[in-house]
Length: 90
Image 1 (cartoon, helix red, strand yellow):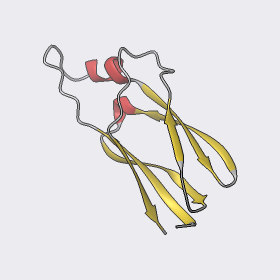
Image 2 (cartoon, one colour):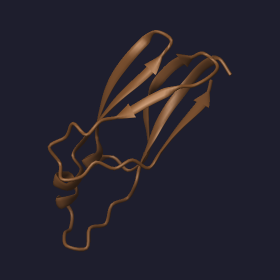
Image 3 (tube, rainbow, N blue to C red):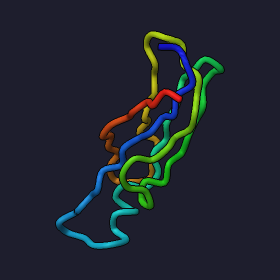
C-alpha cells in the first residue's frame, strides 16, 4: 500500500564463543544500506558494533508494489550479516 513508512533493520545479538566485549565491533563494524523509495535512493550507514535490536533507518514514501533495500558487503569487518527488515506505515 502506498504511503509513508518507518524502516527498521534488526541487528541480532552476537555472542562470539572466542571473544568478549569489544571483539563484537571488529567482527561486525558498519553496515551499508541502499534504500530505494519514491524520491530516489538513500544511502545509510549503521554502526552495528554499537547497535542491537530494531534500529530505525529512516522514514520514506513508498508506492504500492515491490520495495527494495540492499545491504552491501562494503565493510572492514570480518562478517556482514542480515537478520530482518520491517516497514511500519505511518
